[in-house]
Length: 587
Image 1 (spheres, rainbow, N blue to C red):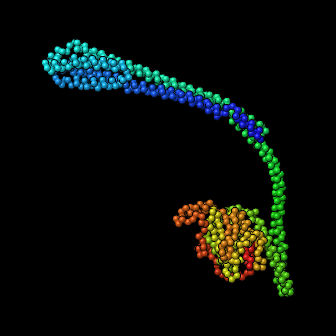
Image 2: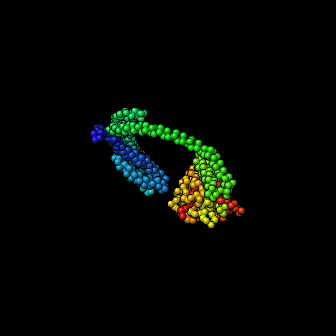
Image 3: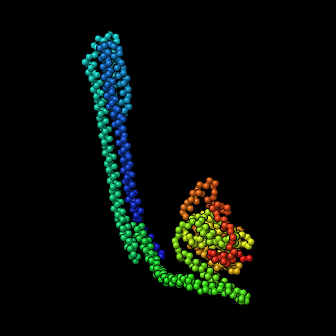
């Protein structure tokens, strides 16, 4: 085990890992891109400076130079006009031109701080302009003011005009210098822009080259080994669990191949175990099939027995009972007392045997002979129950009531039989000298209808609560309470057949309360949830929803109509329904 564990580690340590290779390649690309990005940033900054020089310096310099020429022309024109007219208002352009000239010279000097040739040309213009004002403009203005316009015109000669032409030539030279500086700056802008484009192209080539190298490297060290590994895994997946998986490429892939191969070997071992288990299961299934066939034969035998019991066995029992009753009627009092007692025993035994066979048949048919589930209104079922138990209820002077009952899915005959057994049981096991009261109610709880049958009878001790649902369980002798002991077993089987459960509520107090559950319809569940959500009184959602029926409810059925009760013995009253299932107490 240690040797197997050391080999993958050694294989993993051989060569560069995939992560290391990718990291190295990305590191080189990142270093190159960072260098290019730094160079591009420097070139872009220089390019921005050159563009700013073109836009913010050389451009304004050209404009100011042109405006300077305009200001000088205004001065010369104003002086000549004043010399002609002698009007003082003609000097306003001269004075405004001098102010503009000074402002423009200051601006040009500030903007040309980095351009010495421009500043030298500006100095020449300033000197010539100062000479022209001192030698021409000022003397003309003074002469006109002192001697008149004619004297001022005499001072304006061809020499003064040539002197101003020299100023104009110097301004043109200044403009040429500014234009030269602008062209040089523009050339630098073009150079830095071209350099920036070249750097961008180099960066694109680096990225493209890195991408190509990455693709080729991934194809060689990732895709091909992975494809080979996938091909081997598919061979195993197709059923060749003995195929050994070998890895290639980076150490990670080799380690992955070894892990997959270990998993393959484990799967192969488990598959062998599964095959062995499948063989054992098939053997068990064959045995179960034999047992199922045996059960099928046994069920056929039981059905045959049920048929015999319901037909062939009933006929001799009826004959025995009939002839014993004939003997009882014809020879009653003619024989001695012991003979009459023996005949009574025979009649009673035959009748109990008939009831026992009928109850056993009914018990065996539950869930086997089915009519299918339908929606059953338990209010209608309770009406049928009241009709079937009317004789026993009147004989015992009992009172049968029920609240509003729900509609459920089930088999109506079985549900009727269930409730008939419960009501008959409650009437039969009554307390002496106490009129029996039986009440059936329903409440919705956790998606199920909980139906209760409550009476004021003799009750049941808690230790016997589970025994009463077992077939043939009796807590009293048949002389005390007649019956076959099957009634509550039938009740339990019907409830479980409908998907519910049945129990005795040992905390109910007086009498006995038997509760059982039946699945509720979806519509009833949704209606209950909506009612809980809309309840303004804050009723606890976990509190069971109980049908609003109680004693005295108009929808409830009270005790049976008054009339002359049929005086029939308890044993005779038992035959109006299936009355088994001892619900008794000891003592």
